[in-house]
Amino acid sequence: MNQQARSFCFQLPDLPGTFEPVVTMLANAGVNINSIVSHRGNVVLSVDQPQVFRDLLEQKRIPFQELSSCSNGTPGTTGELAIELRLLGERLTAVIKQLEPHDVPISEMMEEQREELLRIAQDLHGFAVL
Image (tube, rainbow, N blue to C red):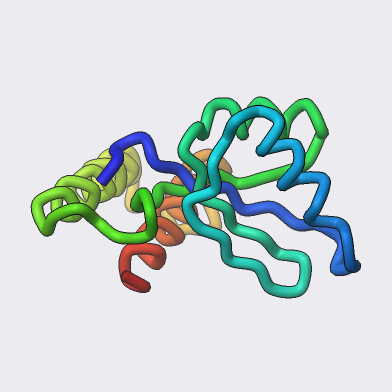
């Protein structure tokens, strides 16, 4: 599994032809799509050059959310999947350590902490789908 593999979640108008400019933009930049999930304008793309795609989305002012993913949709080995899950566990532990001494309810967490927990949950959901 590529430790740098990233998926990008963004929304486009749910109209014919709105995805074509994104695909053309990627092709022109030499970015390959590893996987695609799309439903009613919501798109999740996993690409082989995440930094290039991130820059393109920012240039086009397309809001996006970035998630961990497995390259080509599947882990190379069980050990690689375990490494990815361990890294997610470390991220979760870091957030918990910030909150632990204060026993902070979710409603009172800093926005940054809530967003990190949401990203971790989304990444874990992605692995559960595997």
